[in-house]
Length: 125
Image (tube, rainbow, N blue to C red; front, side, top):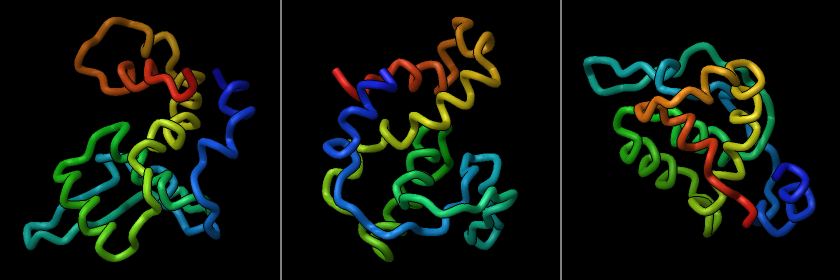
């Protein structure tokens, strides 16, 4: 599958845009909600990359109030059309990393794990 994605990356990646600063490890455990409704992002692995990557990570591992987060993001920095269809593409790298680090754990049947389900998503038919 990785080779097939690489072969079609130009078709799959969407329009080109300059790199942005990413959190780099944006999952619900690194998103803290204050009592006043503000949100704090902690424990970054900051680097430059595509803006859709952090949002794809939040979709992969879940995030409380994800719809609110995405709506606020789109209000301030709209994404190119088709970004939702590219979520799986931007999840490929973290899924590969987690497969290497936790492969045996991810293969165990556990319907509550988002990662297992997400690992079965096919980017390229």
